[in-house]
Structure formats: C-alpha cells, structure tokens
Length: 316
Image (cartoon, rainbow, N blue to C red; front, top):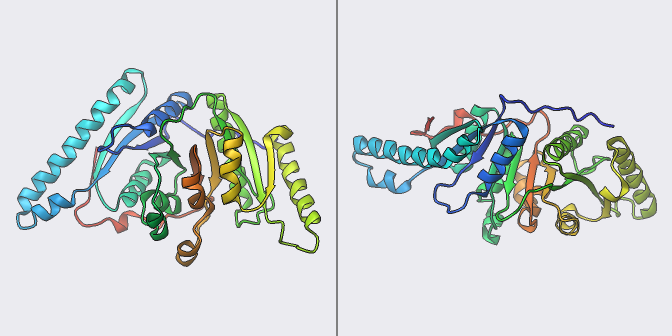
C-alpha cells in the first residue's frame, strides 16, 4: 500500500476565510471540524477593503488612517465574537484581519505568512460573465494559492464523508506522478480523521489512438487497477470513464453521494488559462459538494509580499 503517513501537526494552521458581510459561515464550521479532528490550530481571517472609505477621505490622510483603523477594529471584534464558542470547546483559535486587495491576493499573502496547511473558504455560484472574465476570487485562488484550497458548499453535512479523488495514473492530463500521491495522501488522512470513505476516479481520452480504442482503454484500466491495488481500494470504490473529467466528475460525485472531491490544479501559462482554464475551474460550479484543490510540489505562487499594494495593513 502507498504510504500515507501523518503529515499534519499541531503547529500547522488551518486558515479559514470569513466574509464579515455574510449571514452564514459554512467554511468556519468545516474548518473547526477539521481542526478538532486533526488536532490543528486555526486562524480566522478577514481580508477587507472599503473603496468608499478611500474615496471619501481622499483629501484628509489623518481622517482616512483613523477610519481604516476603526474599520479593522470592527472586523477584529466580529472575529473575536465568532471565535468565542470554539475557544470554549478547546480549539486553538487566533483571529487576524487585513486591509488588502484584491481579495485573493490578500488571502494568499496571509496563507504564506501563516504557512497554512489548508485555506478554507465558502464558495457560491459564479455567473457566466464572471467565469468568462476569470474575475472571481475562487478561480483566482485555484490558480495561485500555494496551500491546499478547500472550497465549502453551503448546507452540506460532513458526517462520515464520501471522498472522491480524481487521479491520472498515466499522467496524460499534464499532472506529475507526485501530485497523484499527494492527492491520495490527503484523501486518506482526511478520511481516517473523519471516518470517511475514499473513492478514486480516472477519466481518459478514448480518441488518443482512434485506430485501437480498446487498447487505450485496457492500458488505462491496467494503470488504474495497479494504483487501486497499491491503495488497497476495492473495485466498487474505483471508477474509470471515457471522456472529459470536467463532464464526468459532477455526475459521478452525485452518483456516489460524494461530500468532497479532491483534484489537482497544474500551473498553466496566462494564455492557456484565458482560453481553457483547468478542470478544477471548469467543474467548480457544477459540483454540489466541497472541493479540495492541490498544487504540485514546488509550485510558487505569483502573489508575494513584494506585490503588496500601498496602504495594506496586516494585523493580529
């Protein structure tokens, strides 16, 4: 069996992104459950920015500074109140706020600062225009967040979760072999901690050799079976289908009642992203469950502290 030894430690941080303007916070519930079961600490984080404050105080820098401090203080107070019940449960929770923009860059900078083991955030449906322009925060995080990114669907229970990991044993979707190992390691660690059930799925292109499609299917089946044997996964938890993974994953996740889909996101050029995006981006709005997106080992985010906009503030 492939080694999936414990890699999570108490010193590692689960970074939970909180929207101070939302009424419900499913990412907080999910993150606290993980923290409790995995024995990890939590950073509750609000990254916010008020264009109204900036425009309203353009000619009065002192007024603007005071307003910004008050703005951050209100967010910090909100987080402290949100953290209270979890602190009472014995979970190690820290609250942090920032004035930074755009939102996805502020989140990534905090993830880098915290050395986050997971970044957990609520997700919601994205409009066709938003998808076309690649303008929304979730898609930008899928591309650029170096930490494992967990996007939480609202109103989703997480008791004994069914976990579906999308693997590519022949690495024909540009994924390195090490990424599949990392996907499975995460799947089993989360499954073990939450008493979940792990499945794997592989989608393949049957037209790669149109003269002999049966040979192509047999080749992929052999590779997937070998991986399942190493993982000691039974046949009923091993799935293979011909076609585009962006089309197959939503249907299969529904069929097996998946609570979490784990997939890799490889680095692409800006031109490739503008044209096709990644499988994770293409299925995000079609999955009715949580999504955990992983980057290959050695991925370096284009977002750094060198790109911090003027006036940004990070405060505990």
